[in-house]
Image 1 (cartoon, rainbow, N blue to C red):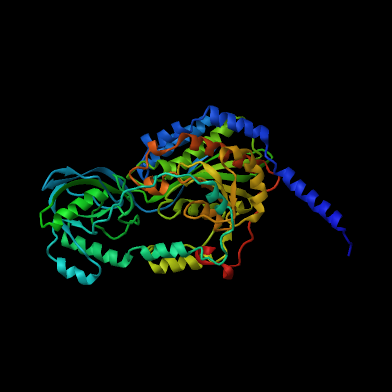
Image 2: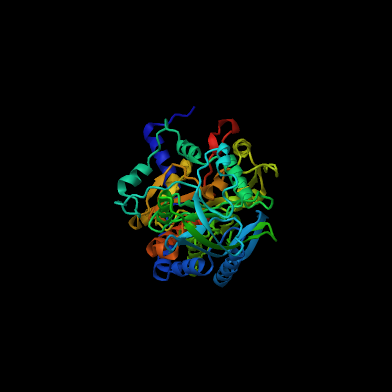
Length: 542
């Protein structure tokens, strides 16, 4: 065995490190062009305005989503992108809100701040009826209300306490918080404790189905509830039904601003009648049960068969216009590819942008795309209830099964996702991939003065990069300032253009363009994490 002196070994390691550093050194000339175009001639807020003010909301599979896609395709063509197309996958029925209004008529008139949940039926004309507080904790409570609810508006929850807000709704990461985020989590802590706690707080789905069946049988006019979060006119609205074409029927369900809901509860507590009037025009869109992903490319040169991807999800909820969730991610991704084209930068690898459908229903679009192009796992039985514990168990077990790899699997370098609101990029999550740390450190170094320098080994969940990461592909989500994401905009009626921060989106588009460009120019594909053996995976495939 040949012996190395400590000095020679150190020099050898240093030389290897220098070679790696030299390969991944940021291209400052390219970054100058990217910053010049992205900061001095930005179009990101104009893109954001079209995606929110004009072509939104975009519920998955809806006609509005298709109209928005046509506009995006036009911009891609204008900028010279190629291979612009849709890729369909089976989704189910969509839903459209056509008209809605709600009023308290007695004992005093007041318009209500309220929104119907998605995937609920409409009402037959303008409906007027009395409000009644109903408390159902189990099926045994049905008998208390049987035969007493026909034509009435059911207030299904108790009043929710509203406290004064002494802290600002918006925030940015502080330096100590970023420092903490950059550290490895306590290995003794359970990273899934938060998810387990959230699951424990979720309503009993089987009981809720039985309650819905009871309300339908009793002929209630509508079921009202206070917004689970938010106050001051901000309310958070999701789905009241399911997108499956054969999904069980549900009653009309409406989320009401907490202050307006609480007022009705207090009046009823005084044994004074509350009369409401409501109109809801809504329809299920089930002529075509497919949804789709929107794809476009900047062709590469000598490595054009290899791919670098970026994107976000194209679908939004319906109470607002999806400005921060995730029109901001789509606007940033559009602006990033526009910058690269306008700056005249020619990537070696093909840069592919993907706008995903049905992220809000469970990453359905990106999962379908990954399954079609990169790696697939078994599909659940068609008749399995996706809300059941049986399905959750099936999904956990399926994640322990190695995926079937497709031809493009070996050609993808990385996917970069933008989907945490309007906040500027502060760094990036490594998703446990230590090998990319020095690469990303080099690429982010020129953006330290713009606030982006934090790199953390931690994982982050909840959005489309997981579809790539879950099959062993490099999928990354950026660290972003919270701003008002959880407190005001995420899935709320205030997720609108005016809550978007222009400077943050400009900074994000510049950094996204640079990260994608450097990945496209690197001699080798980005390193990948080793495929974890099925028996060593933890919850949710980790």
